Image (cartoon, rainbow, N blue to C red; front, top):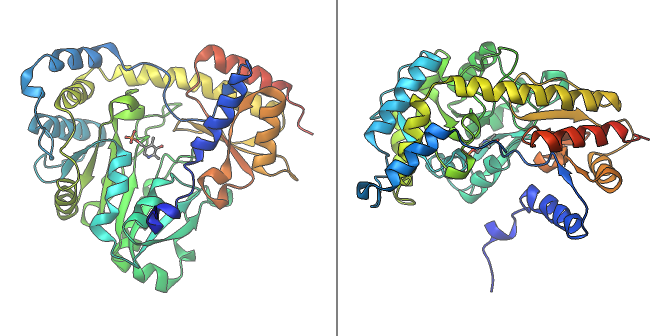
Length: 387
Ligand SMILES: *Cc1c(COP(=O)(O)O)cnc(C)c1O
């Protein structure tokens, strides 16, 4: 059997390899602590789950949903965005519910990329920007995210012919994997750049509400002109511990949303309606849930950052996201460091290059580790002799 080139050229999804190593160790009876995967360990809050129970019993929710989502959901999203960002979006034409941000990110390039077209993609970055572009027949021009630039892409470093040829630019702040955040001024530069080169801006704001020390991440859509050039992804996954339920949304330019809707209605049949009811409950719940969740994560962040510093890793304490991005000592690669930590201490961290070549020299530690395991993991890291 001959699979298509697009399948042939797929690199293994980074976590497949890590999961295999963990399984091997665990099969030998070893207790492995993993800081590897960014999937909230805390449960979905009770009131949100209750909405699912109720909705599951209603036969109205047993049938095909509409691709564009329940009007009540789009309305609730619009109201939440108004409260949270002070920006008004039409529930009919400027908001589109998704089966997770990942689904939307993978499919959006089908709207803008023809074979041979270019997308600008951050490196390191969430792998789906690149694969979604490749599935649509396009190629990715990588934008290095460097520590000396605060992990923002240097837009001036993009060659003019590439910028003119590019159809889309992917950005993600608060950032996975670096934990970096963007300023409103940076977003203003992005709007100007997109206008100059006629590029669609796709901002992945999956961590819009995972933040610490009172920091409130901005939305790209708060920027003047953003609605003329772009679309932004938001997710229930990290904000409300809902990764397992698969629901998110996009908001932005009505022409983009319309194209997206037309593509998606040919691929999926929407989000199970009981899950949409859950999402409405999340948007309308006491938002103190989020504050309490972030307080727990902030405590974990401080312990993980402390452990890294204790063994001489250079880290900046992240203001947002679920990740600590730590520079490994001179003279070691990310993979050498991660392998030694796993071999000697049975602790998993993700080598930076799993997110792209510019991640070399760093490892990522996720804060989605149950408190007791985190304590043990931090203890083991603290004992690691970092020769
Ligand atoms: C987790 C994550 C997503 C995926 O969110 P879902 O809504 O669960 O699909 C998207 N982008 C980034 C950067 C993420 O870290």
